[in-house]
Image (cartoon, rainbow, N blue to C red; front, side):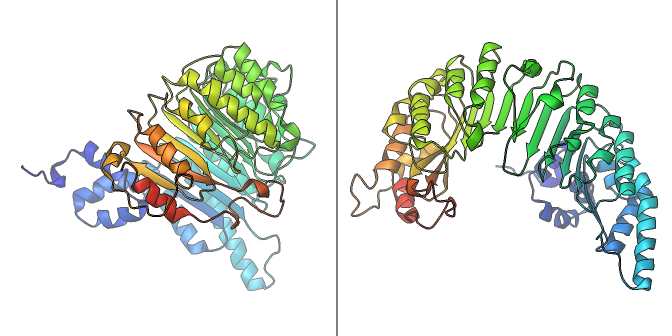
Length: 470
């Protein structure tokens, strides 16, 4: 068989290969030859990070000068720009000489930053992190630079502070296809952190397809009403909500008529029943999702799944089940009635509860899982099995040899019956098995999931999986 040298591959094919390499490997690949160097540069500088802080000031100034002069490869090749605005310490340097150097450095950065930001004319995505110490002039320069980016389609704004939210003129930014905003320190009662966001969403109403809103701290969820109630009809296809909820009798559900995928992690203990309204509204509007990710399924979600067919991807992640009895009833209904409705379309399924219970694999799930004829990826939890094992090309498993000695049928039950269940699925390629935390730890505040009280049987389960089939 003749061999083809990588040198003779087309540039498009070679760059496609380079895209799958680790970033740390790219500098070494550049050293091979001139053609390799030319092929690697676009990928190597496709993502550029600028960290604004007083540490390593010489390195930062050299980078800013190269970008401002158009000599840095990222000016041409950067498709994604990350700006980490860490600012400066609130306490100024005590020595006069150090304070003078500090001011000189700040003046140079302030002068270069507008030219730097306006230089990324090919960038389509910007990720901007704003901290407690970020300064007015740096925020103004970044905003002005973002406005000047003609190719910009996506903005990811990480607000690590609420101090400067009113000073960011978000409404002046260009219309976007994707907008993701994360509030690391929550929202104040005044709602000042949201200023400018409804105007930006309104400005992007004709083009916005991907919207993500996150609140990182635990507590009461925030209503979407202030953000979307005054916005014209949106055509959002992908929605991610964390820490937000849709209030009852709200008309903002009309913004989601074109929704295809939804990631919803909004339910906390006090709001467990409020999630029913959202699913009831989707059902009433006949909004049939293709991809769903959520953490606390409820009865409304089960009824919604039963109302249509066509779901392709479903992930139920880190389910806590604050009310164990209710959570188990919901799980049993899910396996008995809801999941089978999508048996002819579902390609990816992930169910990973934190604690053991009916969401874990058991006899109640066997019949339903065996009907998923289109399933390609399956991730599921097993009671008392603290392990994480991925199996690729599942069809090759039957030839493996049994090496388990001294184990009863009861001990091998979870893995054995799971493997037997999925062995008949014609398209399954990847199976990942997780363990679930002991149920007795559910109400122990100081005992976090993954506590050592879970019986360590990783080796036994590994043997059961690799020896299945004989």
